[in-house]
Length: 499
Image (cartoon, rainbow, N blue to C red; front, top):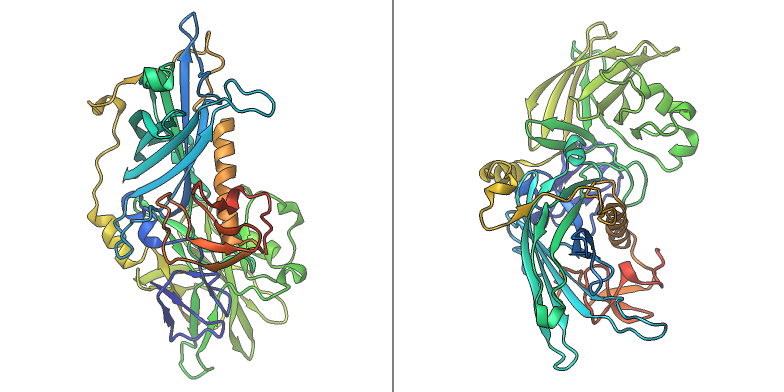
């Protein structure tokens, strides 16, 4: 559930049943392509919107070195994963994503003729605990004589989060990888050359809160801070200010973080996400809010999420208040009196009155003229309902490879003699490619194709971890995501053109 505060800063919140989008907008929209009950948040402590599994197969050369497979070439297979069609829509405890892809291998191919294997690769991923997943990859081959699929191999791998991913705040995505495992494929039906496999998983993060532009997929200015072991995100806050005497001026209410159309040109946006790019060109509010005295404003590369507003119009001026989080630090509040000339920024202290459903804080400033009383209200994620499910699932401690008795883990070979073995680094080419594919899937959901028509079903019927079936003005019927082999997929389509 989400509480949306109108652009008129009315404290009587409007209750909606779905997750909202661009909540700073006076006309907030429903978020597309995201279901909190199938976001893995209860198991992983963070919500995700889509994912990609990458599967790699290796054989041995004559000297025993690992190289890419020949019959299964290329030896890198990408499987988009997401909510299965049968997930429980009424519960946030869903912990499994799935996906499937059809692949024709390139071995024996000549121009105009494909002589490779026709493979179906099914992926089932289960979220176990923060930093730990389980991934089962089943590879099947379509037999040319019977036109039926025969299972070549099915293997389950423990996926642990990479060190670089753990060190990050997970804003863009989380990355996981397996060890290199011994395995074997069916000799008669699938060639039997595969000796070892490994896998990567990329999970694209979902973010709650206000966006800096009037478009889906835009960066968020949501306040983002670490509370305990998980990350909280806050939508645009509401402020209530009143005179300490109670009768000097009337209490006033304002919505923080409102970006009016054209604010980018006028440089007076109040919902900002600042990082290292373009800092030397900052103008207007961005330049004024970048350095106000909050901790960790230096170095300038530290990401800042900023919300601001004018509040408390009095006979001697108005107060300009800035809320910001830097990296994943605590919320910082600064204020100054805007009279004939701007006064100095004063860093305030925040006292939390209520931490969830909604967040309520009291801000106080030592030395701020007029000594106003300020209350701040915000909607947070996780909400208390989601927090309950996170707290109720106490996952196992991080599992070392040798802790899984039913899996045979081995050490990856040394670089000598095996230069063709792709590095499992989270910065490797295949991970970059997988992330690009995930972003393409997210893009076609966030920005539907101009040819996309009305929905033809309420829930995906393909069982392929895909999207619901839509009419298409070019291809008749299509799905925005998934791997339905019988329908056109927007994320793969050459005719995709965003609205």
